[in-house]
Amino acid sequence: MAAMVVGMMDGAYFVGRNEILSWINATLQLNISRVEEAASGAIQCQMIDMTHPGVVPMHKVNYDAKTEYDMIQNYKVLQEVFNKLKIEKHIEVNKLVKGRPLDNLEFLQWLKHYCDSINGGIMNENYNPVERRSKGGKERNSRVSHKVSKSLQANNYPSVVSGNGTGFNSSGPKQGRKLAVSSGPNSAAEIQALSEQIMDLKLSVDHLEKERDFYFTKLRDIEILCQTPELVHLPMAAAIRKILYAADAKESPLAEAQELISRTLNADEAEVEDDE
Image 1 (cartoon, rainbow, N blue to C red):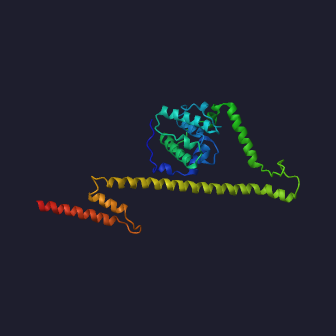
Image 2: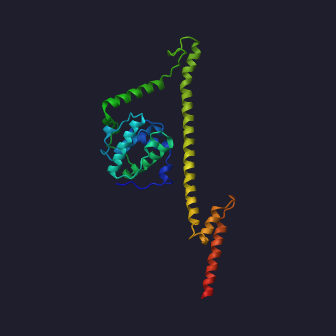
Image 3: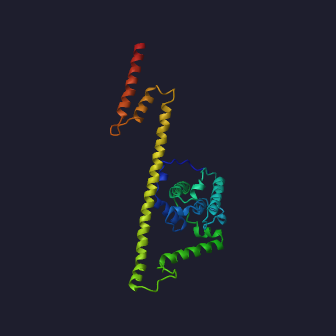
């Protein structure tokens, strides 16, 4: 089944980052907080596996991919599945593996649109994402679990490192040491909140720039069309150019352009009547 063409101005690309993250976490029983965490391609592979059960060779999908080489292997698996399912979607692997938020968000927005179009937005209750991920091999899963465990320990037990790098400083006032430990989570929460705000602003700016470029390209195409020798003298082309080249942003040139077309049409009608 070939995927339908989705234009950049389609509603699919206006689905928010939080909605995408909630969809991934709920569907695959994960707990990611940033779209960049999907840069490895493993999540995309499993989303297709959930939508088309058994099609993706999950034993080839590396959820522990950290290097670009390992990530590319995941995208090769995904591209092979796309070819098998006749999904006409170009995967910009070189951009995705860089972990840029906007590139990964747009690909996940397309992926959600595709999956929803196949399953109607309803999760497959018979699909066990954790069990399917285990197809990647016990050794890999144990490495992932070990890393997650270490990460959780680091987040839950912040340490104050002394100058000699041995852990808690044994010297100094106890009150100061207690303050440093207790203030850590609050500071981390504030940093996390500010980081999310910055990320939202960056995504908004990227979206606005892409929308600006989209419409500018359209206007430029119209301008070139109106400048072709066959059309340049037509009243409609002149009216369009009047709108394109209007310098005053406060007053719309639409009325003047419509009047130009009306005068031309009336003149043509008068000539026809005179000929009769």
